[in-house]
Length: 164
Image (cartoon, rainbow, N blue to C red):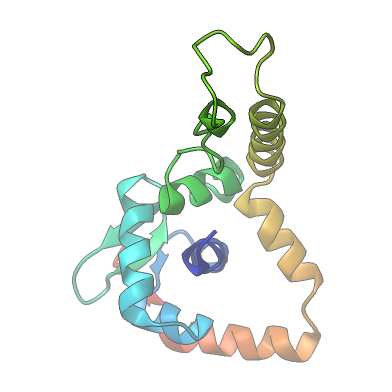
């Protein structure tokens, strides 16, 4: 998995902390996460294309969640960034032995392909049951009072509120 997945998960979790009428500019989000703005922006656009995020333009613009945090799974975020292709693709190398191997020579399905397909399902199932709401709850439990206050001050200085 690319670094973009980690960044996208953290960005989405961070945006889940905002009030519904607030947005965070890509520049501020990149600063908050300590990552490249241009690379993060590319991935924020992918998240917006899939409806995970919403992009607001103008002086009060930025990014916000496209849906409720409990309705966004980690699998959706991963797939928005990495795509939906399986992690393992079988190339049938067992048929490349240095002697004739006509189709149908193997009586059973490839055990490696089957094991990797099982692992893929387990991986997707684990990410499908975890939501951004789960991540924000875990984040909140892990913050010291000092860090929480500093974070709240940073957000007050950087968040943009849409006019009512």
